[in-house]
Length: 468
Ligand SMILES: Cc1ncc(COP(=O)(O)O)c(C=O)c1O
Image 1: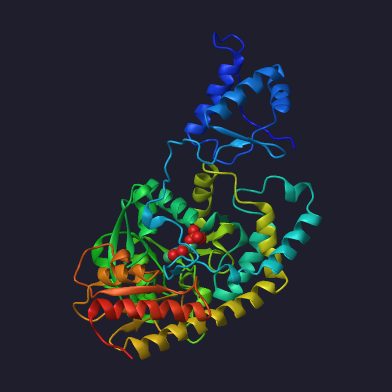
Image 2: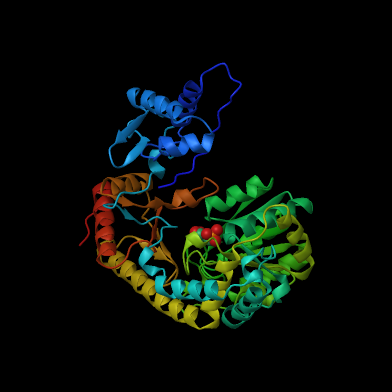
């Protein structure tokens, strides 16, 4: 096997070549650059690559083995020892450590690998790769391949009523990049703050703050974001989730939609519509995108993270025409666009109708899970109130009065159920009732029942309440 290694030694140094080589390996191992278990090239190959005599490498390797940095096994070569000293601990805090297989993950943002349409994706990628020529394998335009933007514009118009032109669509690296681009441009236009829903997504507030803007929390109720509070806040841009408020699941009412657009026109401002989970809104609750009411005021943002997989890092922005060029300029300074092949595979899924079929299946599956959560709550946690109907990817459960939210979360963790309390999603500390937010995108089938049973036991243990 021919292994490559980035390493150099200096013929002018006063140290012998073998010592230099040994020190170079030791430093890389101690810094964690060369990880335990990493195979290193054979002495013959490394000597040839470095242009030194093989005996130099044999001497260095022998020393590293003697010091416990390397292990050498007949037939399988030499590698960095499993117990080799490394100074770098895990950057992950205990709470962020990936859950073990025995843990049920009811946190929002979790994802079930079964829901990714592997065969469809493989077929689409295979078709695209087989037919890719010079243009497809070269640099895609930073805003995305025109043919893909054309397909996506048609799709968004058909499914969400989005009114856009392919040239005003930008393919982004997920919603996250779209938000970061927009915040950057808003800052350049003199904005110093952005209104956000409270409760909402703490990760988004971080993106906003990183762009030098202040996230201003705005209350939400059963009709979605409170436009009266928005108007009183003084901000001129707002980030909102009208289809299904994250995390409460409320749909922005028709009346509020009209008020929101009037507000944006009055303050000469912008609305960022995060439509990432619209596919999971129950058909009876579904409304066209807010953007369809005011394409010059609303920046529409979508994502493939929930409908395909977060790993694709595929998202899109439909910008008002006067923002398109400025946003493209910002993007040009950031990267050179997203993978053209993945864009083409995504467009192929849409063009062949495979994506629609997949979404119908996935939507029905998630709706079933949501109904299972609601039924479980009604039966086993009767004093808990779920918000948001039968849609979305998470259920927001309001707990009774003085229930200690954090204690329930901790008790659930002890029962191997990862879940978050409402406090996690709150920007302002206020007197909102305690809550649990149950993300059910990552757990399905009988596992969901087990996870909910563990949660209910944790709840009863903590509150002393009895349930059936
Ligand atoms: C509120 C919200 N918006 C958008 C997204 C999608 O983000 P991205 O496309 O960067 O994965 C998520 C993902 O969890 C989300 O929670």
